[in-house]
Length: 120
Image 1: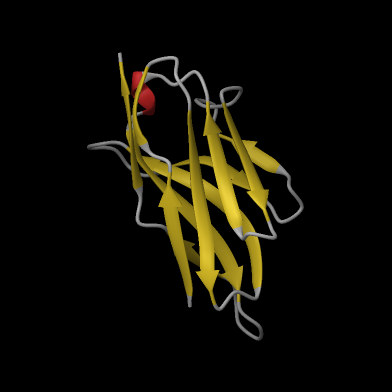
Image 2: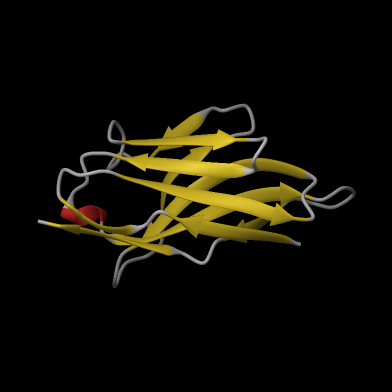
């Protein structure tokens, strides 16, 4: 089993920055892609950014150029640096990790979510 612990959310003014962290722990064998999703009130969860095991990245159009995803494989941690934040970035942000245990199929794990609120 893999556990994910997120940190770094909070309240920030528009134009400000935050950095989210998500650390994976437990019975870790091989982590594949790591990513961040968000869900605003009344809306579906959406992909924000994803980083592969080879460090290739993808971003949603709404955050491209403002957010940067990175990972530290030695620490089993994924980060999301969010710059130039806008009120529409307000949401609960969830970490997602695709993990493969030896001899098993890969499966997704989710963090508990961290609130990001951007005031105008």
